[in-house]
Each structure stands twice: as structure tokens, then as C-alpha cells.
Image (cartoon, rainbow over all chains, first blue to last red; front, side, top):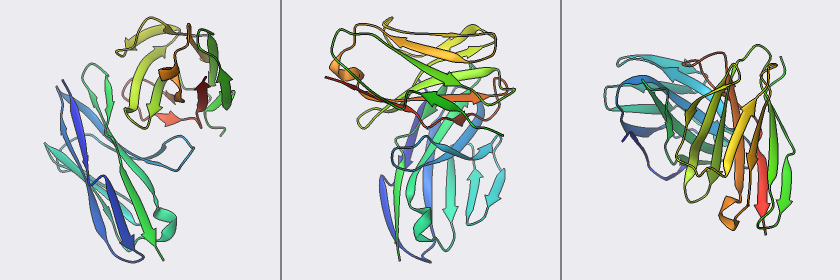
Length: 109
Length: 112
């Protein structure tokens, strides 16, 4: 069965303190790995899609990378508005989507 | 471009009742997926519809069902509600199978 494990569960950073979130996965044929951001009471907001090992994508202070076993979401010089829960999901060759439990990020000014 | 819309946004029901939730995908998107999100289980896949056909189904009981109309709008129905069905129900749309999904704001269902 496909599995997605995100770590840490929660992360508290000072504004400007860079860090990384981890998403480890096992999947029967990876079609894509997705990163989403979710604010309380709202639906997840799409950030990135990665398709193959070695791929990297960037958006503002966020950079996502992918290996054969895990993905990292690097946050450079975070701001308080980056506070949210970050979700990782994988889609397998049967088009099944499985989400991780998320990392709750808090950035303090 | 309008995003995914879901109605109603909030709903309170009692055990044993049934409920229907609605989702309008982004214009041009033909795939609609439904998810249940709870604090304990996280985001769990319910089912996916593409061109009015259910293409994929998660591990949920038959009380959970859905359908998709010719205009790609989708409805999800839960019959004989249980307390454990209280959750945020999210709809996501995409162009096709492996395209990125875009989520709606969700319908928060409370079962008393």
C-alpha cells in the first residue's frame, strides 16, 4: 500500500530562519508528487507538482525537490504569512492519490 | 478564471439523515475528485469522476456516493449519517487524470 510520511509534524521558525520540510513516500509507480498549502478552514492551495527524481521547482521563498524516496520543501527566509499546514501527496499509476498528514508551520515575527 | 466552488459551505445534520453536497469545477476541467478531511485521518480520497463516469473509488462504505453531470458539476451524497461523518468535505478539479488538482473551499459537515 502506498504511504506518505511528513516530518516534522509541527515546525516553529523565527522570521528569516530558513528550514526544510520532508515528505517520504513509498508508491507503486509514481505519476506525480504534489505540494499544497492549507490555511485553517480553507481548501488546500496548489504549490508544486514534481514528476521525476532530480526535478526541482521554485516559487518565491519556496523550493521543492524530489528524489526516488522523498521530497523536500525548502523555505528560505520565511515570513509570518508563510504560516500554514503544508501537505504532500503522491499519485500512483492507478491514479490513486494519497496525502500525508501535513506539517504545521508557524513563523513568528 | 473562477475557482472551484462548493455549496453549501456549512451544514448541520442529525444522525440518520442524508446530505447532498455540490461542487462546480473550474471551467474546462473534466475531472472532479472528492475528499474527506478530519483531524484524526487527514485527507482521504473518496472518489473521482471523469466525463460523468466514476473512475476511481477510495475505501469508504457504500453510504457515500456521487455523480457527475454533463457540465462536469458533481454532487456527493451521504446517506444514513453517522457522528463520524463530521468532517470537511473537499472537492478538487483537474483537466484530466494526471493533471494538478485544484481544491475548493470545502463544505464543513457537522453531524449531531
